Amino acid sequence: MKVLIIGSGGREHAIATCVAKSKRVSKIYAAPGNAGIAELAECVDISVMDFPKLVSFAKENEIDFTIVGPDDPLVAGAVDAFEAEGLKVFGPRKNAAIIEGSKAFSKDLMKKYNIPTAAYENFDNPEDAIAYLENADFPIVLKADGLALGKGVLICNNLEEAKAGVKEIMMDKHFGDAGNKMVIEEFMTGREVSVLAFCDGTTIKTMTSAQDHKRAKDGDQGLNTGGMGTFSPSPFYTKEIEEFCQKEIYEKTMAAMKSEGRDFVGVLFTGLMITEKGTKVLEFNARFGDPEAQVVLPRMKNDIIDVMEACVDGTLDQIDLQFEDNAAVCVVLASDGYPVSYEKGFEITGFDNFKDKDDYFVFHAGTKFDNGKVVTNGGRVLGITAKGEDLVKARANAYEATKWIDFENKYMRNDIGKAIDQI
Image (cartoon, rainbow, N blue to C red):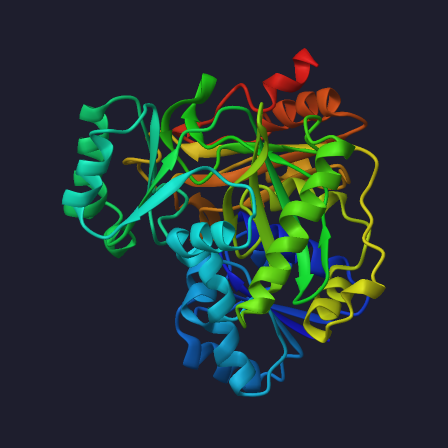
């Protein structure tokens, strides 16, 4: 079987690592891929948003199965473009990917179908938003409606901050067209948990849980990023909470999307907040989380192609989804200055330290080849993942492994998973 993976980040490297283990796969292509993915796949220089070229490549090279990794092409209709040409592809169609593409849509869906989430209001002009905020309780959350690379969320502690936030999102268009509409949401406190699930439009099967760290600096300080590290499983996601979420969130969401004529096929990411008043949905995404995929996929026992094909074929109910009884921690090595401004092009050394080590992974996110050397090419450069018998051991292993890699302006948080030491 020939497989095409669309994307170029750490998530796609984690997917490619899983695909490469499948005995059914003879050849992997990646568009455009990165320096790490290039060790497993033949990388082709096609943009994730160039659907005609991607489709033509798939047809010309007789690709049997395509996996769409990032949110932008999914929301823009990549799956529809492949299906229109009779090609087998994994991911939600455009009309289902809107669950991530529009926060206003997802909040309205949850309200309509009684899926627990924070109280909210949607706004399409800044004057109404500011008028609403003048009588709001603080802190409060402002969210750009559209895709914003995981960064379009502002937590405002007072009216002055909130007004500045409205200006940033809706008037200055700091997040581009994502800020044409905005959601103002009740601020929730509690433990955040990320749960990824395979879906075939009817059946939903959850993977092992994870927890991401979004802020740039230790102690959850600094700006929101695409994710500075993660761990799996979450000890705060108990069997009782899982059973509640299965019935009141996951199954309800699948049924809601089906009722709306938007059957969801692919990976549904549910961001949860475990509050004193119960577990509620923070957000939905229409694909694997990044860096959640880097700790969840290495623990999956199944052949990923078997599972993804079952999603596309509508036979997910026949899959026994299984994960290892261990733990994994991922620490992101970033370029100092991320997510604001940073230099690129520095040589990265130390990859050989990961060879022949089954429980250690170095997932490339922002890298490229330059004259035969691997150099930094983004804000989040690498995801260093390690497994262990429990979270404490996995965390120690991951931080030890961060020492094996070196590049100029290397930056990381030093407290990924620190909460697990206190359990």
